[in-house]
Amino acid sequence: MQSQEGRAATVTADAGRFLGAGILNTLLTLAVYQLLLFIAPSVIAYTATWMIGIATVALVYPSHVFRGGSTTKTARALTGGIYAISFLIGMAAIQVLSVALGSERLAIFGALGVTTVFNFISMTVVLRGLGGRQAKSDPATSTLCASGCSKTAGLDT
Image 1 (cartoon, rainbow, N blue to C red):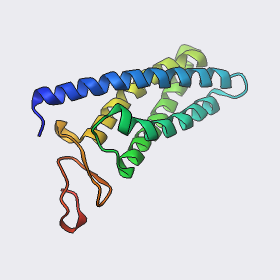
Image 2 (cartoon, one colour):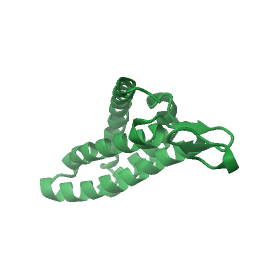
Image 3 (cartoon, rainbow, N blue to C red):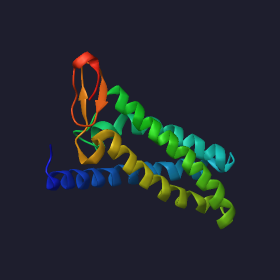
C-alpha cells in the first residue's frame, strides 16, 4: 500500500504525463476536426477524430501515461471504453455549445474541457484503482483488481 505522499506523487506524475499526451492528442484532434469540417458536417468530423483517438489512447495510455498501472487487455479495453463514453459526452457538448455559441468551430474547445476532466478521473480509477490504491493485474487471469489479486478460483478480490 502506498503512503499518502506516494499516492500524491503518482497522481501528480500521471497528471503531468496525461497533460503532455493530452496536448499532443488535442492538437491532432483539432487539426483533423478542422480539416474535416471542409468536407463533412461537425458530427462526422468529431466522430472521425474520436475514432482515431480511442485507438491511440487504448494502445498508449495504460503503459506510457499511467506508468505502473494496469496494462492488461481488460484495462486497455476499459480505457478505450472510457474514451467511447467520453465521445458521447463530447458529442452532446458539441451539439449544445454549437447552438449556444453559434459556432461549430468554437464548440470543440468546451467539449475538450469537459471530456478531459472526465477522462483523467475515470482512467485514474480504472488504471490505478479505487481509493488511491495501486491497481494491479493478475497475469494468470488478465484481469484488473484494485488492491491486489487473489488466485483463489481465478477471482479478483
